[in-house]
Image: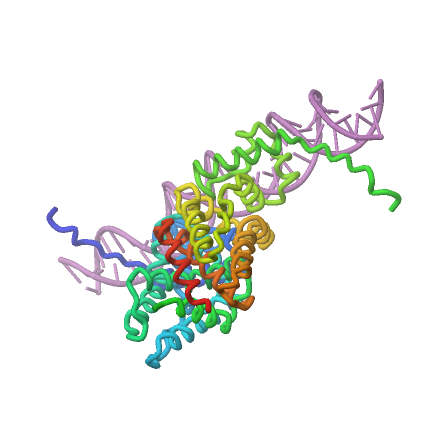
Length: 191
Length: 191
DNA sequence: CGCAAACGAGACGCAGCGTCTCGTCCGGTG
DNA sequence: CACCGGACGAGACGCTGCGTCTCGTTTGCG
């Protein structure tokens, strides 16, 4: 192995962006099942080979495209000093995003894509659910008023996030107020 | 409209069962995306038209097949008089089912199928998540030791079920013990 | 017994798959 | 600047599976 040096990967940024945009448009126009690589290539003004060269399969392309517009998870709120208040606001913001028609459609398609391939699931967790868990867990851990164990925190966090995700996947209503109330209910069970 | 009477629907039970069994086998052998109607017809020893005659699309066939073996949701436990104990056991049983490799695969495929078509989602809710919500909600409502409002119950129930479903969909571990603890954490937040 | 609807089988045209082969473009190296 | 090689747009290729259709056969209800 002298040098694996010569790798002048001249990937075209123009093509990359056009493909992700076309995929997003087609997903929201016609849905997950109707999405064909041929249609993406045509709309993006790109050869099919260029898609196959950089994305190993449909599910990963879909996840990349949907996660590329990363407005699904809003920024955490300011720290007021009270964890229940902060997490209630955070959950409300998240519910406003996930509960909107576009957010709900995105979450459902991401979930379906993640079903197909564990690698896709890992990527979704890394970019979406992981950061959510991390913020909520950290905010709980930093709350002196709630003495919690790590597993208690993990349970509470998963119940809150899972409860919201479940409502979206089940096509049930998810409102800002409902999410805040659910969060308060769950957190009141801690110490 | 004289009489829409003459509807001697002589649907073949043999074919119906063979199709659902073949679909289940192929789903667990090759996964959701690889499932083709042609393969189902071939394995079931059935004409394609017989499938198209009774199932309007792939997603509904998949949901019907997976829900046909309705061992996903275990029977509710005996009533011990203490709601937290009962619901902790119920959640533990449910986690044992959903957390098993086969149960997890079934839940993931059902979720993905439900994404595609609202009708499929409705059917899944009717046969799976609806009864779960109904049992847990009723058990909570019948608990004199926990004075709860309907919306509190709904929030707690969705947090518990959603938390479990979330862990399965995220390919995270879901154990009997973990589910029981999560349930207790959530329920302790109720008055 | 006789009809009509459902059945198994499979042919049909079509859409999209994933691979391949063109000739062109273009950025990094010498 | 000139060159080189890999990525590019375009699209042909064979193939699989779609959903529809047409056979001739079976089967249950009247």
